[in-house]
Image (cartoon, rainbow, N blue to C red; front, side):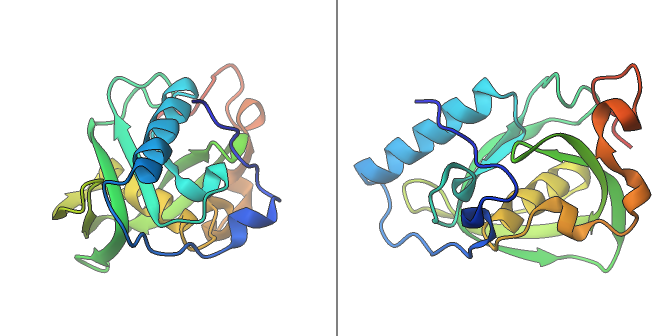
Length: 177
């Protein structure tokens, strides 16, 4: 089922989410299906449970020929529950981000360039990956939602934050940089 995505300003987006205690349950499976349906309907690169009003540490992400991210490298479809992120270096890179909870806007956001993330899939199987670039950016963006952080809170230069049509006249979205 496609769920309503909360928008910036809704107090539920500022709350810290709680860890999932039980895996492979009907409730968790239904949440994940709704998250997938909602993300696909909106052509999102990822979605966090808090964005649909569920305060659990659950994110999903994946990018395959997404019209919202035409130049992005592929990111495998992933369910990540109770994530832990660890930067692999102090190197930070900035890039454009948007968010389903901040529709029609983009911002230039600093993120760790490389990181290791670990957590559990929907069945409770532990896994970890080392990633970089756009994949690392997507993971950090989605996991920020679990701590009540939206990307505008990370922007350093507000001359590089605004509505898509004002920042990029004649373009629907910025090119990946």
